[in-house]
Image 1 (cartoon, protein in one colour):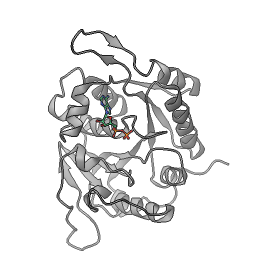
Image 2: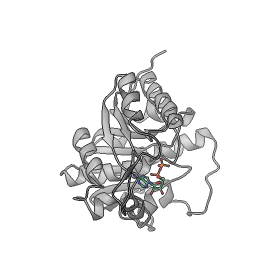
Image 3: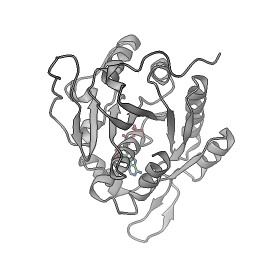
Length: 261
Ligand code: ADP
């Protein structure tokens, strides 16, 4: 049965937020967080007011991607958290609140209430777009998040590999089920350009995400290569869009931002 995508209230923290866009993946390790971070920084570079919520409570990556170790402050009335800010993006992550090596071992309902607080009990202020880095997969948590986060659209990130694509299709189905429009599929780690010989290698095969998008009748949003600079930038807390926005490595993420804006 189809359920409404936008139940009742947005909650105080989301009042000034025009659109909430989820970045999701059927499985972990495909570059969902890398894509979400570069997309958010890219949108900010295009002049939009942007927030990024790291809702991947089991494996938060925003603290590392943005090299942030401080804790968010509480608002004057003590009711909400003030997001951190870097590269023009307002940031909130469970990773700001728990120690890095501390495992989150909560059950579903606790995870949901934590995500709901990160979404709503934060002074996001006026935002054109709040990008939500979803937990990977299509389980209960993801489904209720998709249903309750007032999402105006979702991007599904996948590698070109068969297995990843099956999971990507599950992701598309999940958003369809709760009537969240799919903005499209983005292929990450699409191909490898050898820095030594310049040759192109399609490590995880190629073009699969485009085919999956066509099959599902949703837009294809482009492809980013598997590239050393992308990985290094992320690990150093300076996503490629922040330290080399004009580089060929940043181009696919900027093009994605232009499609989403
Ligand atoms: P996910 O959020 O899907 O689990 P991440 O964004 O955390 O994936 O990426 C997993 C790892 O792969 C990280 O080390 C990241 O730096 C790296 N990575 C992601 N995208 C790329 C890319 N296009 N090229 C090279 N490394 C990448």
